Image 1 (cartoon, rainbow, N blue to C red):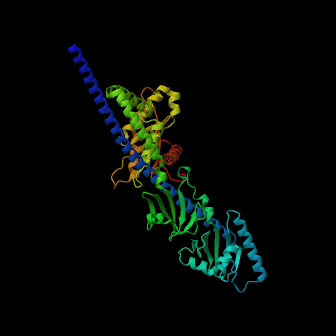
Image 2: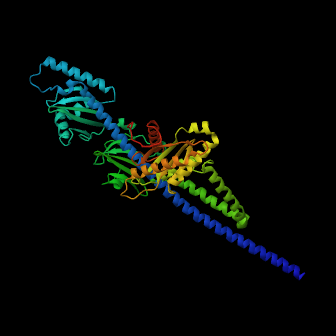
Image 3: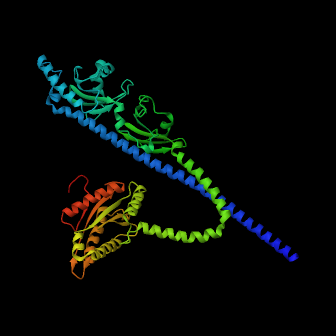
Length: 497
């Protein structure tokens, strides 16, 4: 009986110890998960902030480019007026003008201007002479705003510039219209104007940043344009000014706002979004993570760490094996198309603006003839030889992938010494590849030789994302094929050669 009682006590003790061990383990797991969750949330916040900062910076730069393009288009339309010779030769101030001929000439010029007005929603499109005589479309609002000083004020604005033309707004604190003026001759000035809300087509933010406010402001931070419209003429909110005051470009963030700014001539494109909106998703993620931590602790108490250890080892191995198979091209062992594109895109997204990279596309010349002449088995051997040559020519820092058929792609990550010409470095790599491939890709049985062509694009010169660089390299590859094959070509932008 005593022995039986002792056994019971021992069993109870063992049970208590086991329970205590599992309880301590569950607490440790719970605390670990909570700590991990806290670190994950912080890391998620940081990554999300960095991502949004990069996104808003890119968006702001794109808005600036859009604005510059729009202004350039307006300037081009304005100068189309000079397609009519009388527009730049006629002088309404000439005392020798015949009144009838002057009226006829001014009608011809006005008809030309009205035909050009159809191209855009212009409020004004005309010429004002030093005697304040005007031709073309001159709105009542402009006439009332400037009165008899129209020519004098426009001439004064042009005198401040070097190219006899300028953009301006805010005359007498009226910011609803944006003006472009250009001197025609010593007694005449061409000017156009349009309402600032015409810039809606320029400043169109994506759905992912629909809560972002976009402004165009002058050097005094008066709003020339905003999505809300009713803010035009007001000062930029003080909390935004405090972040960008004295700065020409960049992204700046505090606990309340993220603001990006880029200078365009004498104006600034400003994008602003509240920090709480940026981090809204991470708040939801944090709640799910904490719930997951509690649930994980309960599972840890129930199952114990021994079972998890035995289960996770084979599972981890299986996942790693499946991951390798999912990313590799079965024939060559290189990265497949999807894995290569994802890896390169991620790399380019995290590349410094000053860092040089090159995207090369390789294609076997007349590969179809290899399959037709020697058979598909020989074609497969040649593809494997192609992969082997690429792996021997390029370094382990470079990304090499097969992206379809006989087409291969390489992102050159390795940067040579600063004093070495980067294009020459890439050219040497291509020469080495072409020669090595010709030496290796030969069917000894039939003495069948082949060659390969290469198309090259450089980052950041030709683009900073995979899609843009791939298209540029593909065009360069086409030029290599067209010029006789077995060669390489650097992308030349819009040029055909």
